[in-house]
Picture 1 (cartoon, rainbow, N blue to C red):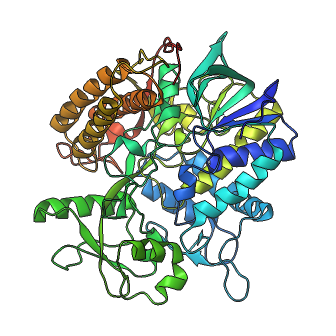
Picture 2: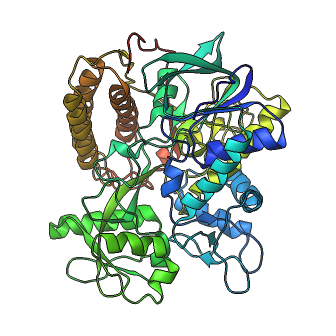
Length: 545
């Protein structure tokens, strides 16, 4: 559906996940702003919909506290979390969860009507609220879509945001193309990028096909500061199956007692360690045994179907019975911990441009995301963007992760180091393709396989260099092509190039970044690697998609 009332938008939201939609609802219903939402799929079609585990939040009652949630988040982030950003997350998070309940999101409750809480890896206590056992993202997305369709003045579905429109040093909208190939500029006083992550950089991922890093690539082309992109979290328990995206076996299974075993049936890692540590241990054991998967043993879990109906249904479809079968698993690309650098209000280095959710580097996640903090981050910082816009804020302040690049008296707890990124300004057209569609698909597959092999859970200098050569080939195919598939390939290549540059520069192992040639953590790299550059020309717009 497209509503064409675009005149004088106060806020244009790019993306339809939890960060963007919660911000859109808040802006329209709480503040009466004229809001538009633009998404390249259907409004309901976002990575949020695939989120299983739930939302981590301290909703009251002993012995849990926001201080414990903060400590768990900092521990998972391996020294790169911004403590102020994490404090905002854990203190404002409970209120945002209650906002969702008010909107109609139905979380699981026990017989007494109390919210059921699950424990996941890296959490010291059970604090994760969930819906449908492991269908939390779908329930949150449902509630938000209903509210957005009620309150937004402009909804553009199946429109591809190509690039930011910048006038007089300020973002004033985006250039977009619809399914017919027609292009136009959608203008607004403020633009919120909430376009999600880039899981499609890798051959094995839990992310939908649409997760091609479009928002981060748009920022890179516009010279907007980007940070922490070397930290890609791999979820350790994705079902090892040809289906893509890989079905996710929620962290909550291990929280309830499921065990990790190698192909010899031996336990080899603490199941409740943070995801980066579990994925690393699994990958090394798989290499040691020359196998392509491990096992998740959930046979000891009682009432599996009742507790996890969504997972039980997915397993039934592939002929697995968790009451008697060990479940084949392998790490899969899951979450981009970095992205567009923001302050505590979501402001970026470009006035008029804001970012929230997985596309952003708020400083919350550091080098590795704590399980079930992602939906919470989107809700908290999406709301903060709206409040800042309402207050008349227009530029970034030296708060949160933004202190890495904006000078502030006394310095930043975590500094920033500038890195020159080999960003790729794709010379793309929107016209009939010059290269065959099959060539674009093949180049995308080659890029994904190379990134998985050379820049995945384990990396070294040689593997990163080999991968960069494949990315360069993908750029060549994208630049001799046109249309939406070519734009996605170009965006993947731009983000891949930035990731490889940062990963090569970070000569240590920290969080979700493991260098086999630099195995130790280094105090020298207790810093953000910030990538950015000059504003670059946008691709041409002749013809049709």
